[in-house]
Image (cartoon, rainbow, N blue to C red; front, side, top):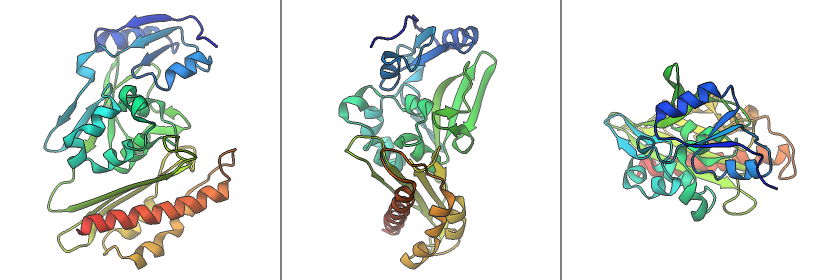
Length: 291
């Protein structure tokens, strides 16, 4: 099948993008890497009147590091982010997550911003961003705003980004103070490179005494959106993370999820696997922080 007819615009500036989106009345769509959008266009699952190509806008590509955060621009290729020494050392959880995204060929074209814009509940980059308390910066003709990952995901492939907004960048906060950080990412998929049936991302911070000062655990593929296990996180903070402590809080994972049944897995299977992957991720992240 071929895509339905649309107008193609190779944008030269962010201002042009937001202007076209504002005039598009919800019928204009942005393309960057195209790893998801192109198949959707070909199968006519998406039938926009206008497709805006943002690949030539230089200010939408690249990685910036400040004292407080790492900023990844929307058109930055996933392969570039994975190969970046700054991402490997400062955002190790993101690097671990990206290594599970598709295959080398898809990562060469796929973008960080595109994955967050599409927001598949089983996708790895949104899951890592949620676990790391990231924010996205959005721009429309009316101005710019930031949205936290906790408020960004509204449903399966539904986000707080309005039809007339373009995603400019994702901002990852860096740990502050004298803390040790450990991270882990685990997933189960039908084949390596497929979307996760279930995935778990963990981010643990320990103070100088080995006490958990912050904990994050996010589960993907087991609900309509990637979810933070907030009740579990609250029970881990303020204590040493031991195997016994992890076992004591694992029931919070299954209790927080409302998975569905489909051709890939049953709800019961997803709950069971989510609990197992959560245990692995927390154990590995805690061990890394203690090294």
